[in-house]
Amino acid sequence: MTETGRGACLCGAVRFSTFGKLRAVSACHCSQCRKQSGHFWAATDVLENELELHDADNLSWYVSTPGYRRGFCKTCGSLLLWKCEASDKISVSAGSFESPTALKLETHIYCADKGDYYEISDGVPQFEQGCK
Ligand SMILES: [Zn+2]
Ligand SMILES: [Zn+2]
Image (cartoon, rainbow, N blue to C red):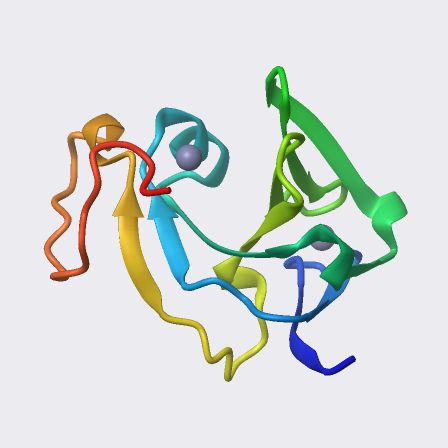
């Protein structure tokens, strides 16, 4: 399999490689992503079986809503992963990938829930809710 991306958390305790096609990046403005990331959260996704985690013992998972969990580094707190249990895909933080990423931001989602302290003005399509 060909590696399509690789990355790590801030401290490097959790590293990953992706194999297979990465989705265009979505920036999620929902309140959960804003709280966990500190702003909005930009992520791609990949089939879960095409994500290889190294040192997954250093990951901690938080179930934010039943059926959904968020993975972050136990040491540095970097938000890395978001998983919907009903999906065969897993979302991976765009900001955790090494450059060059070949990724591109193509959608803003859950804009109805965005913070009141910023405007989205980059011309990228905006969706009130998710876009799938
Ligand atoms: Zn870390
Ligand atoms: Zn979100």
